[in-house]
Image (cartoon, rainbow, N blue to C red; front, side):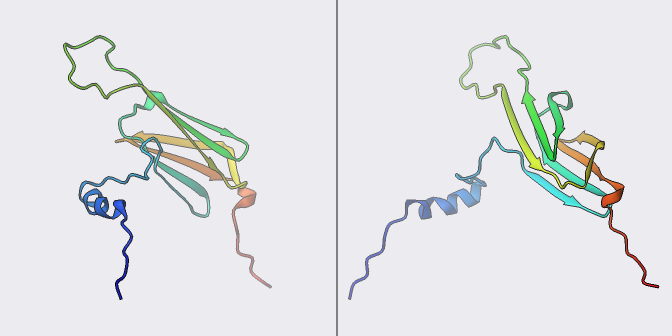
Length: 134
């Protein structure tokens, strides 16, 4: 008996995509992020290569953290005859749900080598404490 194999066009592309690191389903406009917490803080680490510190905005509203990054045009004048011109203005925004235990008043942020680090202090009432039974 002969079996019919269905053709999957993506199956031929996948090995090539793996070699060049291309994922057709990955949105290049998003901000990859790592979020973790310890006993006293919540940490948000976001990859923003190509952006400048002065073009990144951080806002907290309720229990949401909003990050907006904009790239600015470095040079608006034409530099001769372009064969290809892919650099352009772009603006990306992402928001994250925060635990209710985060204090909005104690937030620090640093930006170095394309990585934004946001440190959000937990409210002291939310920090867990072990109680010894007497």
